[in-house]
Structures are given as C-alpha cells and as structure tokens.
Amino acid sequence: MKKNDLTAFKTGHKKQLLQVVAKKDEPKTKRVERRRKPGPPRKLESEKANYKVMMSFTSSEEKFIKEQAGAVRVATFLKLKLQDAGVI
Image 1 (tube, one colour):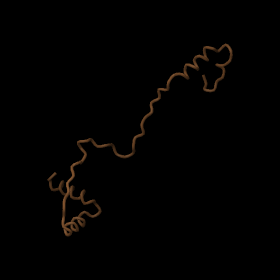
Image 2 (cartoon, rainbow, N blue to C red):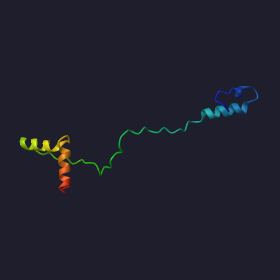
Image 3 (cartoon, rainbow, N blue to C red):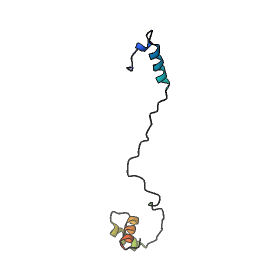
C-alpha cells in the first residue's frame, strides 16, 4: 500500500483500514546510532601516560634545552631523550 493511498478509508475495505491502524500503533524499532567523535580512537587505560614529574632547571639550562628542543615542547623533547638513552 502506498503512503498516501486513501482506498483503505472507502467502504468495504475494513481489513485494510485495520492493517493501517495496526501499523501506525507499532513502535518504531529504528536504532539511533551515536555519532562518533572525529579524531583517533581512545587509548587504553594502560597506554595512557598519567605519571607526572616536576623538574627545576637553571636559566642557562633552560636556554640550552629550549635551543635543543626547537619547536617541540620541552616535556616531549625530554621524554624522547630519555627514550633514546634507553632509560624508559
């Protein structure tokens, strides 16, 4: 039966009318999917870096580290240096 078909409301078409009403009363079972946020998938809890360390440097050490790091953040630079040295 078409969406806007009115033949069900004519006399003698009670069966069709009951089917139309029954279809209207059925709950919609269409599943609503959540939108996935753009970007990379979440890391596992065991892979997240959550241990923080605070360090202090002299101004001359700070200048040297920033020159060596360049555009990279200081914390990332130091972490990479520790990985290269085989400490972590």
